[in-house]
Structure formats: C-alpha cells, structure tokens
Image (cartoon, rainbow, N blue to C red; front, side, top):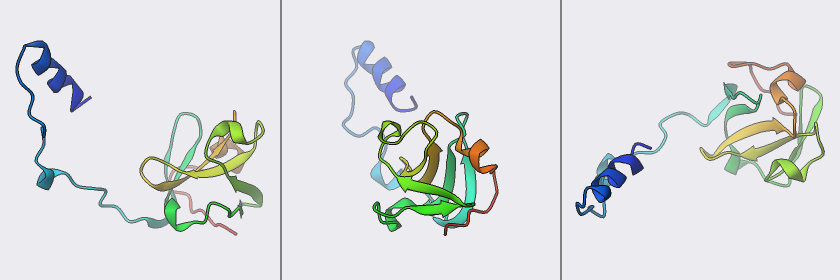
Length: 118
C-alpha cells in the first residue's frame, strides 16, 4: 500500500510514473538475526513465527516440538486437519502452523517462548 497508492494516484492524475519510485540504495533487507530459536510473532490464527532461517532446514526434515511431530508442507491443504507443519514464510523465517487449528494452542506456546527442535 505504501508503494501502490501513490503510484495509482499519479497515474489517475495523468502524470508519468518513474520506473523506480525508490532509489535502490535506500532499499534494505531485514536486519534481525535468523538464529533466534524463539517465537517472534503469533498471528491471529495461532501460527508461530520462529526466528530461524527456514532455508537452512531441509524441506524433507520433520521434527518434534514439545513432543509433537511437525512435518514440512508448502500449503495448509497438504496436511490433514489439526496436523502441525512447518514452512518458510515470506520473510524466510520458519513458521509452525496447523491446518484449521492454532499451533500456539496445540503447543501451548506464546510470544518469546523458546523453541526446542528435536
């Protein structure tokens, strides 16, 4: 919304739009550590964002969190209802979710809790 609304307004007003609205040297990536084995965010659905680099984990790997089995799946529909799974989110971080359920409730985890992956 920060990019598209101003561009749409300029187009609607009949103005030309530059090919680059923001200089490349101003664009930066994330500046947080990806080695933090803690819950860094819990969304409204109970999905648990963990401060670990998802790309560093083999997609074939499944693991246990608090004794519960967690498999990899690219989408929610790839696992049965209530099944825990992990995926790499749009930030590249590990996210633990459950199909049609709250991973936070299933695992009794909250923001800041340490994640131990067996």
